[in-house]
Amino acid sequence: MSNPTPAPASGGLSTREYLGYALGDTASNLFFKTFGFFLAYYYVDVWGLDAKAVAAMFLWVRLWDAVNDPIMGAIADRTRTRWGKFRPYLLWMAIPYGVCGYLLFADPDIEGGGKLVYAYITYTLMLMAYTAINVPYSSLLGVLSPSSIIRTRASSFRFVGAFGGGLLVTLGVRPLVRALGGDDEVLGFQLTMALFAALSIAMFWVAFATTRERVEPPPGQRTDLRRELVELAGNWPWVTLLIAAIFSTTFIFMRDSATIFYFKYVAGDDGSPVFFGTFDLFTVFIATGAACQMIGAGCLSLFAGRVDKRKLAAALSVVTGVCYGIFWFLPPQSFGLMVLLNCIAALAMGPTSALVWAMYADVADFGEWKYGRRSTGLVYSASLFALKTGTMCAGWLVPMLLSWYGFVPNVDQTPRALLGITLAFTLFPCLFACLKGAAIWLYPLDKDKVATIERELAARRTAS
Image (tube, rainbow, N blue to C red; front, side, top):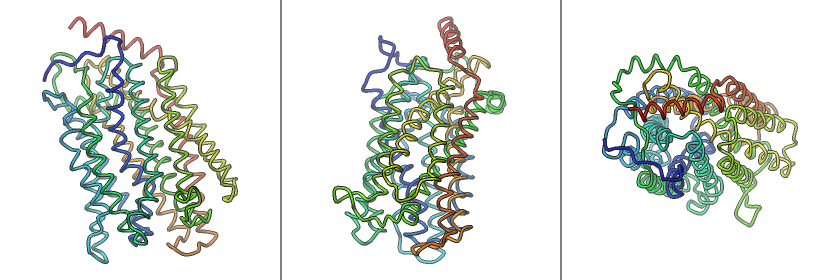
């Protein structure tokens, strides 16, 4: 592998590299946020699959998929090319990723049980493609720079891109489905996802072309997967982040999946455009939230070197959880108050996500500092493992709550069914967000400890 590219003389990355790296998460979220907001709705309300069958599919497919993440992390750590360890996968896997995302909504001419089989196959392939490109993409953050502050800024840009992708999804999916499909919602989703697939491929290629890897493992490091896994299990900062990330993804994906059901059945939003002749209440609600997430993530780069990531991330997680809990007490017709409260929760969530992903890079530094071995891909595979595990939990919980409380698609719901939808939208996300904050509070690497590790690693690398 070629020598790592040095960082610019200023110690930071160029604006071009920050923005290029951010586009990778925009590409990811064009699909991930669409799945979060619309996949359960598409399978149950649009494609007509049974809610219990969808819940079981989400559980088993995501359980299998979560196992793949450490495997991909180990593969990426052992990859050696002239482009580095992680960047090549942005080039190689972009087209499979886009194609698999489209196939989920391709609507082949099948009926009955064949639909469920098709959903199992395409969802499995999509999540495997997501793993193959997103474990390396996430790991790339850990080698963009040896500086924790620079990586935090890069993470801030990354999540501006991520939430920007979410904003495109929230503003674009419902109007695009109506515009491209008319009264045929299946066709609308099919054409919309074809567009998103093309955009995702292009964005991943731009991220590949504009970024560089600058941190390599210690000289002479030998690969030993068994030992690496033992070291990872003994890496307490990694364990706490793993637990926090599972709680995080659970509350985010659960809230996202329940939102469309809440607006359609509890708030009475029939999808009619009420703002500027284009946007319905649901779209305005999630779009303003995504915009505030972008603002929150962007603000982090302004004070990246002056905050203790652990304390700030824990406090902001609790703020988000409390806001979600307050929704339980709001009447569903108070749309203005709902938007305001959701914006506060989103402003707090934006920097929290960027902080946590930057903390994974600090964990990789800690592993190298403690064990003399750097396993960046394996460390970051935990983040994707947690993401898949959280989506598995939420993907099972939302359909099962609907089923337990007697939900029937496309009819007026009973009071019991409305209660189940409201719980999935309010108190359950509140609980998991607060649990995330508690887990982050146990994370042991404070600002001073990170600075000490960074200095000692720099001295070791200079000596090498």
